[in-house]
Amino acid sequence: MNGADLLIQKLADAGVTACFANPGTSEMQLVAALDKEPRIRAVLGLFEGVVTGAADGFGRMTDTPALTLLHLGPGYANGIANLHNASRARVPVLNMIGDHATHHLELDAPLTSDIKGLTAAVCSWTGTSTSADDLAEVGLQAWQESLAYPGQVTAFVAPANHAWDPTRADVQVPEIPSPNKCSDKQISEAAEALMSGRATALFMGGHALREEGLHHAGRVAEATGARLISETFFTRQSRGAGRVETERLPYFGEMAAEHLQNLDTLVFVGTKPPVSFFAYPEKPGWLSPDTANLIRLGDASVDTIDALKRLADALGASPQVSNVAQHMTHELAQGPITAVELGKVIANRLPEGAIVSDEGATNGLGAFLMTNNAAPHDWLTLTGGAIGQGLPLALGAAVACPERKVLALEADGSAMYTVQSLWTMVRENLDVTVLILNNGSYAILNIELARVGVEHPGPTALSLLDLTNPAIQWTDIARGMGMTSQRVETVAELDTAMAHAMSEQGPRLIEVML
Picture 1 (cartoon, rainbow, N blue to C red):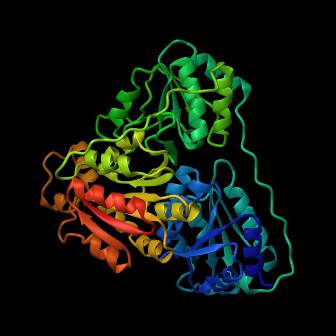
Picture 2 (tube, rainbow, N blue to C red):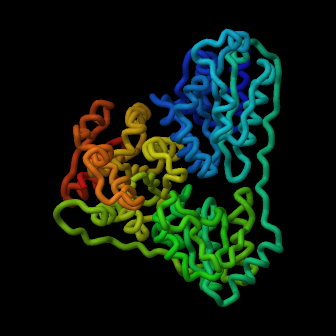
Picture 3 (cartoon, rainbow, N blue to C red):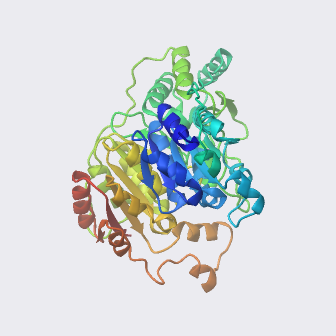
């Protein structure tokens, strides 16, 4: 047995079941080891941003790390944007990065790079093996570190000779660390503040937005009258009929500040006080009211569901909640598709248990608002703001949950960043429906141009935000990757296409003209 064989075997023993890979020459022993391990599903991505984004989607739905296989420093660097998103989402991702054989590094071959310097940007922990005998141990330590609650992006470097050299070593799978708990004092302080009779709110993120967390938050709200507000871009939220409803903080800073302005007390659970995504002339950056009492139930490492349950119990809240969303069907208008009508169609057609990966940008908000009363589902968002996440996130979620329908709401501009995801969806026969929301531009940037004070943009500025010269033929791109595709221009066409997509299995793309 060589170092690679032992490593992959031990990662499978630890419970790793998926590896999203884009390997090169230095990783061939690792590829061969994966071939011998049936417990790990190996999935090829044609770009490292697809690989890392898919691992993020897998981690969001399972709370366990998928393995990535990346080719040296430059390969890892290609995937950093989506690892940034995963890091901001606090999702477990385990990156396995091949490197040159240790004796080859001194030759300074063209692909030699400072891998640890690169991983330091977004990885909470990075290790490098010293021999074939400790390669598996380093890999397992990275696995263990990735599971520090609620999850971390970690990496380990596997030099090629440590993968091919023989080993007789053995190593035990380490224990998963337990999450931290809020102190009784923190619970008491939060309960007292929420019972003050003033305008209060729970501001929630992370696991607080899972179904159980929302249930306990609903108990708190019914006992105190507190508003329930979620992060703008959350990791994963349970939504739809039967789930406790929340308000989603608006994206634009001044709107978010206005949304919070009348609050006297904010209790933060699973997140931190919100700030504006960007700085703007004469617009707020810090969004919480300056006079508000801000109470934080621990940091990101604190078990948020435990904190909410203990908080609700401390308030004497009823174990049951009534403030849940009710299922409803929307009446559709006829004619051209708008963001609101798009949302109505999705809400009406979304099956129970669906997973929505939302990178819809300017046209995604209507879908989000209208689906509050849809069938129960999970909603995933662009946590770190680095676009190109939506398609691979859907891919990873589909690998994690093959029994659930996955819907990717994807803006046309963002989709081009990781368009290779379509090929992998077809190759793996994943049950993903991609809605390309085509408005022919980086529409969000047209809005931002005005918000930073550019009142009369000229032709050069406008051309940098335009996607119609030439127009991208999305149905052709999808067919070129083996995916069934169609274009819809009216609400009736969209409704029919969605009805077929939600009732049939397999990957498909619907280009929605807006």
